[in-house]
Amino acid sequence: MNTEIKTAKAVAVGSTLGGELVSYKRDGQEYVWEGLPEYWASHAPVLFPTVGSTIDDSVKFEGKAYPLKKHGFARKQEFRLLEADSDRLVYELFDSAASHEVYPYKFRLLIEHKISDEGFSTTYTVENIDSKNIVFCIGGHAGFKCPLHDGEKFSDYKLIFSEVENEDVIYTTNYGGGYIDPSLPITDKLKNTNEWELNYPDFDVDVLLAKKLKSRQVKLVNKNTGKGIDFDFTGFNALGVWTPPKKQAPFVCLEPWNGLPAHLGETGNFEDKPYAITLEPGKKYSVGYKIKAID
Image 1 (cartoon, rainbow, N blue to C red):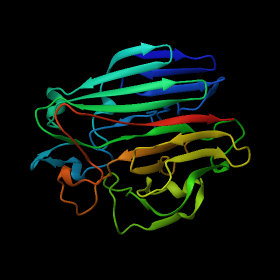
Image 2: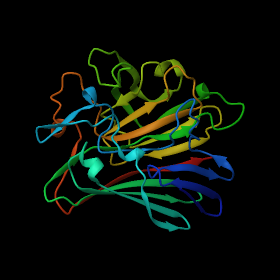
Image 3: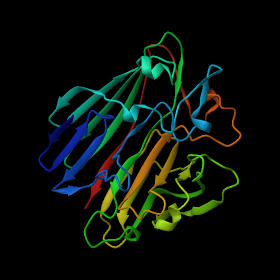
Image 4: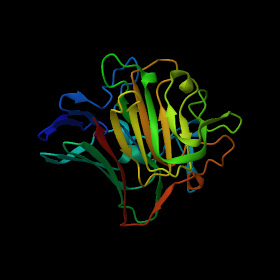
């Protein structure tokens, strides 16, 4: 079920399927990727309770193996629309007998989308309703139209980070489902610079991932006009940048992650995952990202 909300300048649509924000238009301009299935059928899914691939679609919780697949299961679940205000949507998902087959913990997951005339925010809140600690990863997979306007090209756009970076940008594999493989080359996209020009061949392997950025804001803008978006990912440990390999798709995803895909040679124990979050009974954990239009 889709629900529309509005402000004076903006119209957004949320979906109970995955709790996604599937559209945000400001003055008639769409910013969120439309989800065309020939490229990628999603828009901005939540990644929970894992981020990225797992080795052979399996992980271990407390020493027991579970068949948990890439990006987790929440993005494919039907959420309940908990609240709907003029500028705000809140979606809710609880654990179930089916979720316990792949993830053994009891939880409540809330996704809040709040819009304004300038942009929108998406916030994830995980509540531990179990009697023991739970462990999870969580992340976003926000797709944005790129190019935004007719007559533009993907290569007209660049990322501008808020800080000058000197950080390795690594690939995940295009085999086996997107693992981190230390044998893959490391790119110099963010060596002593804060600008990264977008070109399709850069994404022919898979996700490009930066793990230790100083920046917590990045702009996606047309390098000729300066128009685009400002993306704030404060609270996240890593940022992936992705467009489907070798499809020349008219969008790019900015993916803020707390958690990483599987490393080749890892233990398989979920508790060992970099940036995994451990949450005590009765506690809540919130994190989110914000988008502001630049025109």
